[in-house]
Amino acid sequence: RQARPAGRLDEFSSLLAEHAEQAGETLPAARWLLRAGKWAFRRGASRSAQRAFAHGLKLAPASETELHWQLLLDHDEVLGTLGEMQARQGADQELLSAALTINNPTYIADAYLRIGYPQSKLGEEPAALSAYDACILAANQASNLRLETLAMGLKIIRLIHLGLMDKA
Image (cartoon, rainbow, N blue to C red):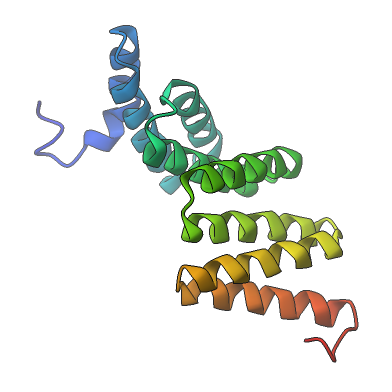
């Protein structure tokens, strides 16, 4: 009760998630875990954030598409921060699957962008370029200039890296 006026509710979000889960309230628990994960990530506690997002994904009902999407997105981000590239690639594919199910072009573009980046880091250049092209297409359909421009820039960097200046 006193945490909210003091602006400290985020600090207790993990505990609130635990209580909600024990009460059988999985949807509120998943929402609290999303909040707990974001708070931990902002504080540099990436491992705690990863655990919160992963557990939230187990609790979030499939019908809660926006909550599920946000948990997937944040889980993907924290895996990248932790340098867990194989786990990140699996999370990227889950993200794309969710984006296609939701059928949101911005989400699809974001998922493809996230797929391309680790592929380029792992030297999987053709796959990275394909992901960037898919991102550009989806971002264009969504009229999302930020994602489209970001993907174009990353694609140009990869093409220059491959010595394909004429295609850049």
